[in-house]
Length: 468
Image (tube, rainbow, N blue to C red; front, side, top):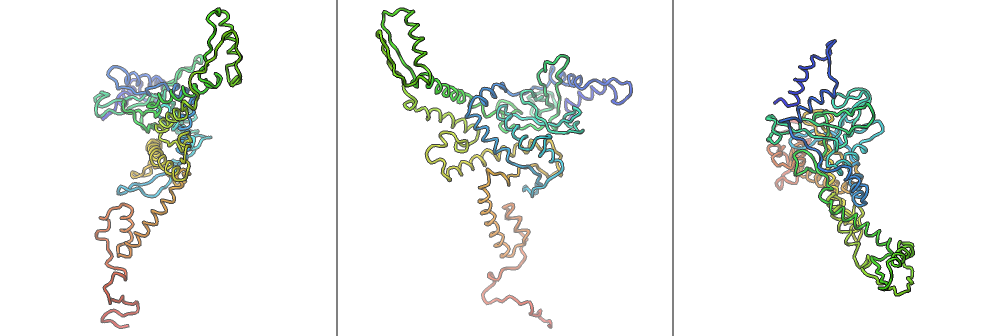
């Protein structure tokens, strides 16, 4: 099935003539892009998908303004970046040992001063605030995508709120069952420099790593930020923080009511209010003794933070934000996570395992599958998978791995003593499939399984009917 991009590209080549022929006019790349975009986005063209919210609003209003969101994001990030990736061949539904390839050098050093941890950090940040992360190649000659093969070839981030997914199908119906992403348009805003035109970039899906760990249920191909379901909780936490600040600004009390004599003039009232605010409002004037005359009466109303149970109110919102992020409050260090006996070894170990097995392994697998697009596979059976053997956050799991290995070693010994072929026994333990042992018995048994009174022939016993 020829895609719409192929058909438009063929029509474009027919209009401009063969490339490389002297005297032939060749359109600049952005002219060709305009033609493609007009065909893609015009009448009867595929639908488009972009992130559904304001990217800057999420970053400024949640990430940079809310300590809980930042802490949850940072807790995810510092674990997410501590991983390596390698190739493993899948055979009979099982993955083999890790191995490397020269192409993965670009993954470990994505740009001259960057590392794999830097790349993963950008992917996590974009996935948090936009629900999507996009990575492709470029070089020093200004080429991008698979055309970037010159000096300075490196990986680059596409800012997610400047990316549009173009969706098409064989019937050009964006809602058809065979609809798929046929193009990715990266269109930064105009730079504002006189005489400089910001050129949109058109890429095909095989040229872009699209990392979107949480699918958007209202879309088909884009992801969703984990912040979206807890926007109200974030707003409530910001309001609670502001309330706490106002509490200390206003004399460490929620409200102070001053009643004046009914015969006081408006001018005297205004002067009294100004004087009172100057002498008694703000944290520096807290707990000062109030002296009034002329019939003024002071009443303290409201409750203090302890009566309001402020810690519980704010802590509940923090926990819900952490739950949406997929990180346990104990791991983040939030108030409810630090209360009581939550920091004992057993609780922290359970919280760590909840984050590692329930959140991070999912994110690592999604990242590996997304990054695999950028690197040629060494073989048809090869898969890019996360290598967590050196991940510090999962180091305690090494004890469990050791116990599992010891149990498997004991099972292997039992199978060998029972007379099964070594390779068959290993295949059974690797696949958990008893059928691997069928027809793979050597016919020999350990001495413990021989009938009573039966003796094993010694090595120096001559065969029956023979001579020494």
